[in-house]
Each structure stands twice: as structure tokens, then as C-alpha cells.
Length: 393
Image (cartoon, one colour):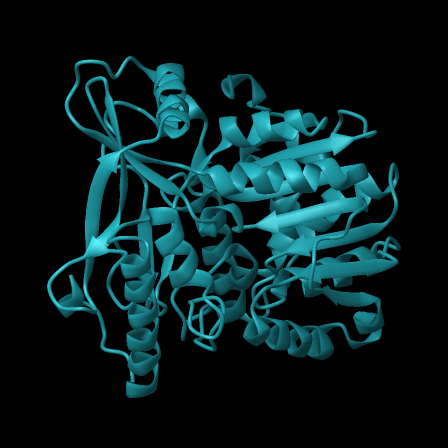
């Protein structure tokens, strides 16, 4: 696997080696084994060294992956239509988590302002200092007149009003891995392998609480007793995040967009190796131990678990559907049809982006949207025609 990936430059390689040494020290301090969630946390967020905490380029052609807001401004314009509807029922403010390059924030602000619904405040909670600066530059270039409405936050507010947005945030939250073998549940963690800078999966009996959560997740989907080994993930941190943010939402709506499935599909018998993926230079592979700190590590989202977490926080579910249907209900095709065609190359580029957003073979079906609210009517624009909340269980 490592031989098939482009080699990093020496500075990046040195950062990765330093992070590997730190991870190795954590493994040694813990007696030779750490949970995969601990490894993933360090690989992504270790101060100064982790993927989201160091200065590597992550988004766009020069990075490791491209998100929907970078593909076309029409994505942000569609979400702006949903925000504008919600602003009629709550404080006109936005709190965005993990704003990436700032492309979504810029397009949302521009589209809302054009519709006469500019938010009085747009807050961004971003862990990466490098991404914060990129966001600031993007907004200064694209919406300079609205930059004074934007704030960057260091901590989660105690009280939230308005609209909460998180596009491709939950997938990057650390997960715990398990291996179920008949009636036995093992937690799949990380230990050393080979020389001091190499790591490998290592299993040990799961603690009682984690084993029970695994059994409940599998029983919701199918009866795994007596079957062969089944490996997957439990997204405890994503669930805790939704519950925490949801509890602080006083009045307003939360819109989460990410790739994933309802539980019955997530833990399908044929998905026996889980959903863990790594992204490096636009290549997707399954080895989380390659170049720690230089590649993204993700897992799909169990939307049933996310829905239950929001309900524990007292939120109501406002809708669940595919990304394609959300965008169509928010007017994507009408917006695309209104684009000028004089520049045929630019128009063709937008057409290709729209196809990628909507196609079942690309982002349209794999990515889902789920919305929650407190004190909000159950009439969200983006879920008007094909709401699938009944599949969440």
C-alpha cells in the first residue's frame, strides 16, 4: 500500500516521523496497546503534528480530497435557501463547524445577502489554524463587505441560537473499532509492529459496556451470533458531539451532511470489514498506519445513532434524505439552468459538478443530510419530497 502512494516531501515526512514517535510513546505508556480512537485522535488532531493540526494542504486539487462546496457554488446557494427558510423561525445566525476552505461560508453569505436574508452573525468553529487563515482569505476575497459579520470561535458556545451547519465533520471524528466473532466481542486497537515507527491492529476482549453497545448495534441490523468475524466501528465521539451541540441549541436547526447509512445498512452482513477509509493525494485506501499525520482517516456515519443522540438532547428530527434530494428540493436544477452559457468551458465545469453532486454513483446517494430542530416547524424545504426518516429505526 505504501509503495503505491506518492512520497511526501522531506519536511512532511519528518512531521510524520515525529508524530509516529509520539504515538509510539503513547502505546508504550499504555502498556503496549491503545484503542483505535486514541490512535485516530492523535493522527488527526495531535497539536502541531496531526493531520488537522499541522499545515498540510488538505482540500482541492493540491490536497487530499475535494468537498461539495469546492465543486460548485451552487451547493452553498442551495443550503442558503434552507437557511433562509429557517431564519423566518429563529435568530438569523449561523454556526458552522469545520468550515474547510471557507467556500461554503462565502457562498452562503453571498447568497443570503442577495436574498435579503444576510445573517447578523456567522460563527466558525475550526480547530486547524492553517484552515482558519485560509477561510479568512477566502471570505476577504469573495465577500469582503460581509467579513465583519464573521467570527472564529475557540470553544463551543454554552448557548446556541440559529442554524448549525456541519458538512463532512462527523466522518473525521475518532471511532472505536470492534471485531465480533460469534458471541465474543473484541476491541480492535493499535500496537507496535516491526520497528519502533510501525503500527498494526491488535485485538483484546472488549470491556462490558463497549461489548454491549456493539451487540445492540448489530442486533438492530441483523443477528450476528454464530457468524464469522465481523469488523466495524462505533462512532461514540460523533454521537457525543451531536448530543452536546444539540443540548446547547436553544432554538433553531442543525443540518448535518456526510457520507453514511441508517443502522440497518451500516451494519449490513455483507459490510463485514467496516467503513474505515484513508485519503491521501486523492487516493482512497484502507491502511490508517501509512504516513500518520499526512493522510485523512474517516469512517462513515451511523445516522440512526446520530438521530438517537439528537433525540436524547431533546431535539426533534426535521428530516433525513440523500444529498441529491436535499439539493433538488432546494432548487439546484433551477439554479443550474439560470447559469450563463457564454463561457462554454465554465458552464461544462458546472454541469460536471452538478452531475457529481447528484449522481447515485458518486456523491448523490452516498452522502446523506439530516436535520434537527428545537422550537422549529417540521416543514424544512430540503426534505419536502423524499424524507427518509422512517428508515432510521
